Image (cartoon, rainbow, N blue to C red; front, top):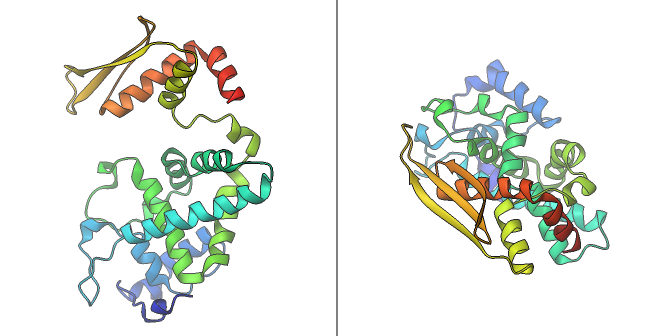
Length: 253
């Protein structure tokens, strides 16, 4: 265990230890006893609380999120390395990206209902969907700080690898429809164009529209709150129109 953790202090109300509610919830979530519940308290604290340590450092889940991201990536990489001995660097990198994609991490966080434990001054409903994945990564970071690599690996095996990592299914999972579509066009010498325009709808949030053409013909349209999302949605719709041709290409590449 890192030496600095010996001096880690519980930044929360000590009554949290007495009523045991949070401790029991974390124990059930992990499948083993946490040693320092204060670490997990921080992993579920949003920056809106403005919590600081006695040294004046901000204490919220963001630093643990950074650590958890690295730990998750390393453990998934090791699993894939051992499970697919014939996979080259490019293959292993692509497979790992599918497991630790933001979409997948958000799904994991939602499945575990992590946001119900978050301490915040802002209603959870006002956060974007990424809070689910962010808190999941922070939890992984907290496990590493509290119990070390072995317990971190144990948790990821139980909550990520066993229920979600199926090599054959992952091989067919698309990470980015836009990237796949562009790669297919370039390989097959097709001309494509994403035309972005500002949507003038009545929505409170600003929306963008995208028209995707292939060799001058419209193959996909979409609208979303960002250009990136709209382009991805348009590419996804184009993919389903041209699925047979693109799937044949992706299996060869």
